Image 1 (cartoon, helix red, strand yellow):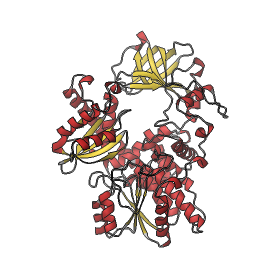
Image 2 (cartoon, rainbow, N blue to C red):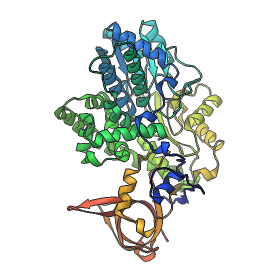
Image 3 (tube, one colour):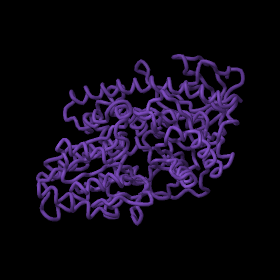
Image 4 (cartoon, rainbow, N blue to C red):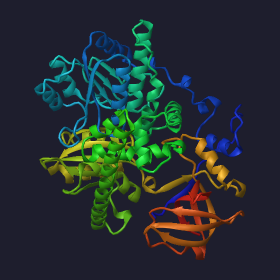
Length: 576
């Protein structure tokens, strides 16, 4: 394991006097995460921000209502990740429920089309005689200046729904709904693309109801919240109060078995009990299987799984997605080995590496470079961009992952300003971004990226840090605590799942499954012995039985042969 500095999350000196009856542990954890009132822990739908705070939503609703009244052809243009897939499914299902009769969807090919609404997609629709009257983008469109222009020239009206950061210019769409567009005062700037589309649907439903145009029986848009939860978690947007409402409401539907057959099928092929899932399962179990289609083949398979009405069809598609995911893992493993060889050739130690890493191999797969960049970011604690060649080999597609304290899209803007024309296009968020450069510019870009990173952060920012909630008392090291924490979520980005640290004697240890470390621990602070497991440590590990270990962990319930016991899931450990 990479050596990390362990920091403990500060707890406010005065924890609010909530009206809720909360155990002291939860009061401490919530206080450390900035929760200051009962309302922030109330996940009822009534606490969602109003959709009418969204700039442009009134015009978007008028255009959609007009399309319903006049029976116009509507096309949803999605994206090839999990947020794009769930956004597409929510748009197709929700608009159908609200009265759109002629609706279809398209998803760009990661390899042939690139990201978002491009002129090429519109020319292809024109050739197929499939141009819509109204085109609705989901999880994309805010940077599609050329695509929107061509659509308007073809007589197609365009409603953009997106959540990505806007550039200097906005597309000339008929309506734009994006909490991150200039002049939008929407409460939650952290909404995922699927959340934005859900808001458009709720505003449209109200508009139709007020005019007596709502179909009977009146549609329940709450049935789409499982999809909203999945897309929100999978896109790793910050879980502010608004997003936690979406996620918690969606999880409740899933646990009750009221989710889309496709989500239940994806959980089934992964061996997960839908009645016990958490937000982590959406992010690390369902999301990757859905994403695998867009990474290796065509996200239409993933969307079809989410749209499937019956269990048999959903299960067939879920198994296909699971196969894609297994193939993705194999490709990723091979690419990571190649990247590690490349890193080794650059420097003998991590301190000698560039502050901003830009890596390329002609054999890398476009669909997996984002995951590769994330893995290398974890290993090196540096912002990483992994590049793969496009189909022609003349351009490189890059996927970036950043570290805390470095806004990666802003760094790319600095590179672009200092080197006009080097970045053919780019976009993204604080922690992730995508870009295209000419292959001949790779070396120049790598140097410019490293320089921009060095002028943005300090050497201290490159130190790997793991933040915990301190120790658990001996009486808190229990199955009851594991259950309490599981119920206390949803946990996620910017509302992190609790991690604890403590000093333990290691009674025994053994490597299982080639690279997982199984241990029996005794807390040095007192209490009973407890099982623990650290995943992916490798076969070569220190003998902790000789010295003991400082362990960063989360308590979990482990069921084996019908018996449930406490097990610590180890995130990090080091010799004492």
